[in-house]
Image 1: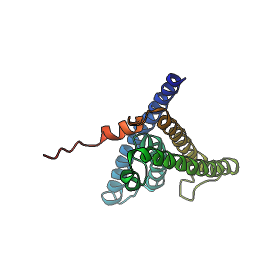
Image 2 (image 1 turned 45 degrees about the vertical axis):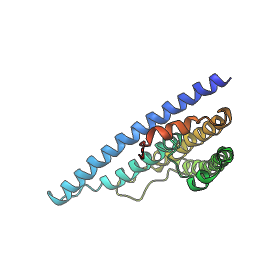
Image 3 (image 1 turned 30 degrees about the horizontal axis):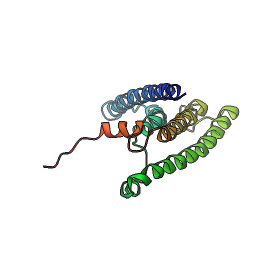
Image 4 (image 1 turned 90 degrees about the horizontal axis):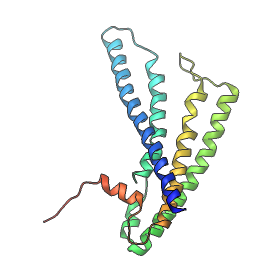
Length: 185
């Protein structure tokens, strides 16, 4: 049972990694489009009016697709000060409480963004830019990203219960792997 859990956790980590790669690709594309906008506006005096709405929606995709990966690596918002000053026996319980509260908030936000997406899809809502882009494909990334984040929260929370006290959880190990080691002599 535990083996299947960690196999599923690795699959979620891979999906989060692919979403991060897409986010990174989109950021590069945003930079290229902003450069194009600058060149057309200031050198040719013919601004490309389509770049602002397109890059805005690309940024929305970047943010929501990277949520699960950020959480998986321990980089999501948390109150570290309270956890770090707590004794080790209490620390893991405070982290669990934080993960549980984060999961609840994410599920509430997921429900609301799902309602927004359904409204956009059913009503055929379009944005107010000159391009009049349909909003459903733009807003679908919010519930998708939040669903990945909720799934990641659930795996992180369950892993914290499966990992024996005194040993780092997978999130702890990934968080620590990204930190530079500082040695004081």
